[in-house]
Length: 601
Image 1 (cartoon, rainbow, N blue to C red):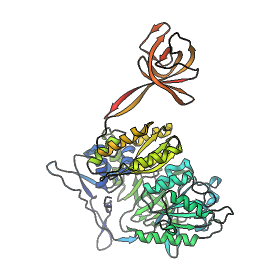
Image 2: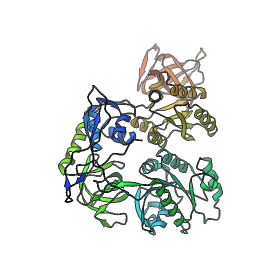
Image 3: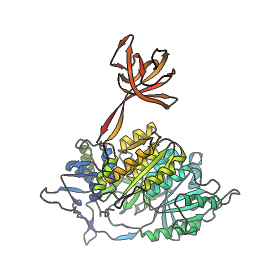
Image 4: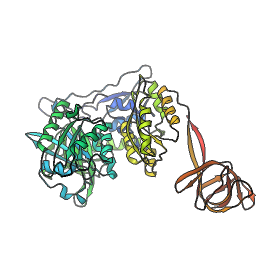
């Protein structure tokens, strides 16, 4: 874990009379070329955050992608650093020149996670003694809300993340910006699929988990069953000899709430959460919107320093002067310290949720940072998109990776355990294999997001990605590998761990056709009259026949004719007759995919 850097603004130190004095931005020494992961280490941030910055400036880069000095300079400036080029003659460690602030205890930031309708917002409602849930459509949280409460003179900040599957991406962002994750499970419903996803996201974010078993007042509540389900997922509660805090509660009857809060403060004490309160504020954008009367509004969570009215802040390509700040009760406040959520008025446009923000000294500096960021968009190198087993094998060889995280999806539930057990036995002295999430069905956007958060890969066994998941994987730079033979799956992972992975065979879809008619033939193979819907069909091309979405045959095109003439290829919009090697039994409506195979190193 990289060491956390100190204040990133010119307004770092104070003179004896209490007035701020100007100081240059912290400096880091950057080599002429370095990887995304190396740059993240120099900046003291997660590689995921660097990848996001690259994406927002027009580059799709994976964690092992090499970038040049100009690219790194732009990214460093967005995190508040001035980059200096390292001389080629020697290799120097990064240097940061920044004032050291006094660290003080800060409130814990706690995320409420779990399945839809298990009582997350009702729990917050009970804690705050206000009717938050009444403002939500259908009593289901539709956005991330940030709330702060005071318990026995100590403050706690809560992030209420949506539990519905459609909001998985927002839930993952909540986990990565929190200190403790509270997993709420209904005693009458048990552990559900979205609960498992939430647990996996919290684990990927490496945050402690506290379990709250809700609805214990219901007649059909079964607390012991829930505890057993949690144990099956690896969450063994303290009562059963584990280390996971578990508190039975009833948000509706307000039972067990005080016990839960006491345990949360106890876990926070163990974590020894501290932050610098004297430096310019830094933090994360929780949500943003455009209000018809007030203009752009952004909910910010301050993570370091103190945000004050009148401060100038920059986030992404957005900046503004804080005209007013409001807490979660809509009361106006003048300042906000670490772990405090506030709604800010004064930005020139709504920022993107998940963006980092920082306070700068002058408007000129804010405009300069944004201008450099926009200009840098044209300077980025073209980056590869795929995070593959080959990339991981090179990182393993260099000693950069200690654990390979895998998201496993299979066609049926029965395939999960044998494949999972076999994968986790492949570890060696230098690296372990861990299946951080597994399930049956198609590969979803949630799986891609979890792979991004954990720097893992996705393996599908007879499981294909949904269209939206494939697009997201392409954008985020996540590799999805598909297998239908177990030994090939295990063999590839084993070779990657040994650093000997051979070139990958990928499919390139060239075209698609639909069977309109079937003609009898004297030969063994039927002739299908088809219409080319996309791309083109080539003679000798590999072909896959799909019926009702399932593959029924794969081989090669042996004959392609237009009218009575043999042709080499037929393009979109045209009709033709074709034969597929070794196949007799075409039906109207069959889909024929034409593809080729390529080797990728």
